[in-house]
Image (tube, rainbow, N blue to C red; front, side):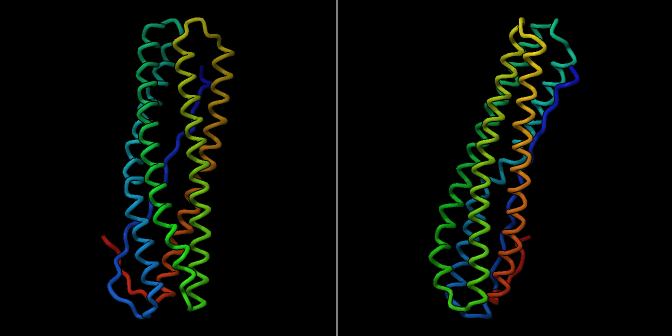
Length: 222
């Protein structure tokens, strides 16, 4: 049964809060933009909080899966017990993902305010940075939506696998086919997660560029 393998995911965390200690350039729109962007950070705190427990649950499920593979199909009662534990973990993962999605949606709601504010900016260099920032974050939200859908599909495939493992008459070929499907789904999850992380890094970098261009005097909240 060594053909069975999983690709797990670790979501990236959002950049920490940056404090505004003064403003060199008195562009009111830039200061309003600053407030919106930091409200976005606040909205994504719930997103950050789901990452460690989500990864922990993924590890627990993987450990259970490895135990099942070590048992072999002859020890069916134990496989059923372990599969039920895994199914419970899958539902907990689903709950954490939903909290994450809600946090990103709250972030998206806050970020919508940036669309009007960037149009108020009169200094061209600042406006250009704000436009770039807006485009990157818009793409980031789109990718997270795609990532969430792929992850939910992976959870469904996980669930189907453990239900199959509980069936004593399931064939090796059926299991192999399901695991192939599952690994393909997790590959898509992995790829979308990489894309999401890349947009997050771009956004954090572009946000700092905007702050500097706007003449905001900043310090890290550490």
